[in-house]
Image (cartoon, rainbow, N blue to C red; front, side, top):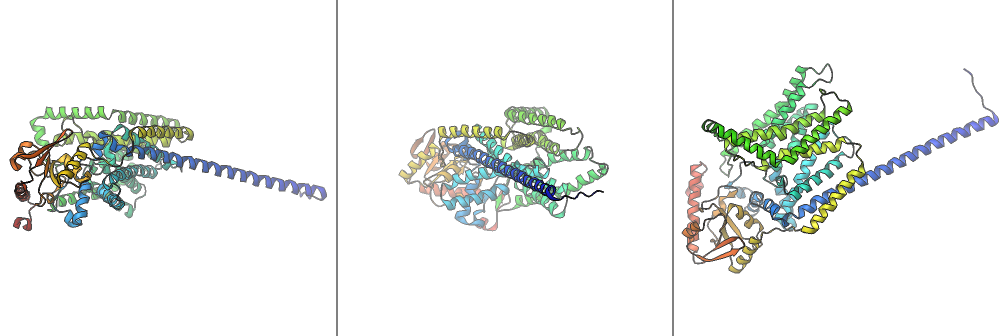
Length: 591
C-alpha cells in the first residue's frame, strides 16, 4: 500500500477542499432539516385548521337543531329527555331516594349513556345556561367524538393508518359526516342518550380491545375484554348480537385465512381464536346474570321483554305471514338505508382494487379484510338477525324497522369512508382541505339562513307557559310524548305527570313518586289523553284553552278534592300493580 505524503502547497489545497466539503455537507443537511421542519409545521397548521373547520361545521349545524321542528322533536322528545327527568329526581330527592320506584326501559343504558349524561348535566346545571338543552347538545358532541376515537383505536390496533395525520383525518372527515347527518335529519340516535346510540359508539372500542388482546394476549388484556363485554351487554342487550355476530364472522376468516408462515398452522390458529373468545364468553355470561338480578330488584322496574317466548307460537300459527313480514321489513330497511349501502359496497370494492394494485394475494390475511368482515357482518348479518328475531318476538312491526336498532349500517358506512381516506395516503392535502373548506362554507350558509338557538320550546309549550302564569297553574296531566317536554322545558317550571289515554298510570320511563298526592292538578293537555276520561274524573272544565293544534283542559279550581281522590285512586292502582308483579315491599303494603 502506497502512502501519499502531501507537502507544501498540495497539503494546504487538500485541507482547504476537505473543509469546503464538510461545510457544504453541513449546510446541505441544515437546509434539508429546515425545509422538513417548515413543511411539517405547514402540514400541521393545515391539519389543525382543517380539523377546526370540520368541528365548527358540526357545531354550527348542531346549534340549529332547535330551529327545525323535524330535528328538535327528536332531540327533545320523551325518549331523549328520559335521563333529564332522572337527573331532576336525583337532584331533588337525593341519589338513593331518587332512584326508587322508577319504571325504566328494556335497556338500562348505563354506559356510556347514563354515566356521560349525568356528568354533562351536572356541569350544565352548574353553569346555569339552559341546562337541559346544553346537556343534550354537549352529549351529542361527546358521544360522536367517542365513536370516532373508537374507530381510531380499532384501526390503530390493526395497524391501519399509522401515519401521524391519521387521527386528524378521521376527526375531520368524521365531524363532516356528522354535520351532513344533522343536515339531512338522518340517524339522529347517534347524538342522543338512551337511544341505543351509546352502544353503536362503544362497539368499535369493544372490537379494538378484543383484537388488542388477540394480537398479544395477557391477563390484563383479557380482563379488559371481559369488562368491555360485560359493560356493553349490561348497558344494552342489543350489544350482544351487534358485537358477537360480526366477531364470529371475522374469527372464521382468521382461522381459515391463508397462514403467513409455516409455523402458523390451522390447529394453532383455531386454538388461538377459541382462547381469545373465553373472556368474551365470561363477560357476556356475567352480564346475563346481572340483567336477571336487575329484573328481580324491587327499586327499579326493567321491562326486559327481548325473550318473551312468542317466537315459537308465531312460527306455528302463521309461518307464511311471519316470513312475509320479515321480507317486507328488510326491503323497507334496505330502501331507507340505500345511500349507506351503496357507499359501503362501493368503498369495499374500491378497497379490493387497491389491494390488487398493492400486490396482496387474494387469500393473504390482511388487517383491512378483518375490518371489512366486521363491517359486512354489522351492516348485513346483524340487521337480518335482528329483523328475524324482532318480527318473531313482536318487537318490530312488519314493514316498520326502527332506525336506531340498525345503526350498524350507517356506522359501517362511516368506517368504510374512513378506511378510504386513510388508504389514499397520496391524496392531495389541498384537495382534502378544499372539501373541508367548501363544506364549512355550505354549513355556514345554512346556519345564517336558519339561525342558532340554544333554547328549544315548542309553540304550544310557550302558549301553555303564558296561560299557566296567568292562571297560577303548577301541576297538570299529559300524555307520555308531551309530559317530559313540559317537565324539562317549561320556563314556568310546570310539573306534568304522564298518563295513558284512559288516565291509567304510564308504566314506562317514569317514577311512581310523581303520582303522590300534593299539589292538585290544574290542567290537562288533551294530546293523547281522552277528554271523556278527564270529564269523568274532574267534571266540566273551567275553560278549554287553545294552543295551536293542542287543546288544554282547565280543571275547575273548586275541584281540588276531586284531584286528591283521583291521586289516591292512582296510588291504590300502583300498589295493586306492584303486588301483581311481585314488587310490593312491606312498607308499601302498610301505606
